[in-house]
Image (cartoon, rainbow, N blue to C red):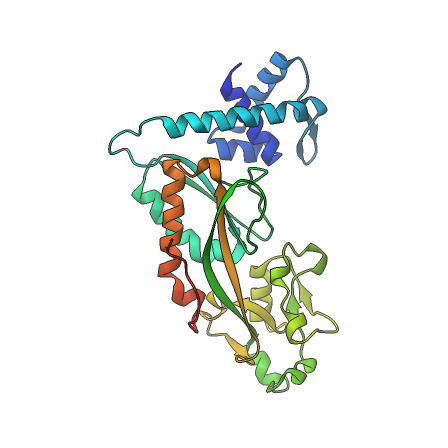
Length: 305
């Protein structure tokens, strides 16, 4: 049985669309479709149900998936055992999952440098306002706000970062002065959509001042930031996002201060792969260099291990 066909089967099972599977595999979507058709013909059964939103595994596909994942693990073992070519450097694709703001503002500029340093290495950066799961192979390395506690994974604390309450300067001039928590009742608020919140670590306002209503809510921290810039109200934002913007000012800086932690994890079976080691070490190096952005007031902890 052709391993390439099975590899494309895995990519489509994990991504759900031909386009996403093709991006991850580095081929055209027609190649993925052709490989899947060949595999289905060989298996004598439809492995995917074609739907408007993408591809969903059929019962035959769900039965095949664990066996193919076991084959993938074996292939990774062969890769680890194979001697590296002298001077070749790390190669292949590493998919890094991170929270939206951190991935976009902190990681993206640095990861671009990494690919310049290692021309045979490719990076997929998934900077998304949701949780990514190693167990589903959605990413090779995941940076999350909660420490993973399940599965055979390597976990390391990456860095602490601070968040503050911010408002647009013109908005703050127009509205009643805020000198204590009780003054917040005169203000509009911007936050996440509660029932779509992907981690409890992003619940801030209940600790500070539970608003009766929100002027604007979004699953995206970038959208919240833009709403604050537009003068729609106050929001808790990462300092690395908001402090660089002269339009914004901190509100109750001593009281409205929160610290959260980024955790980095990868499957234990991948820890010996050269490409994983290179990206893992580079991410550690990156946050050390960005410590002042992440914790502008100091007292933070950036891991160097």
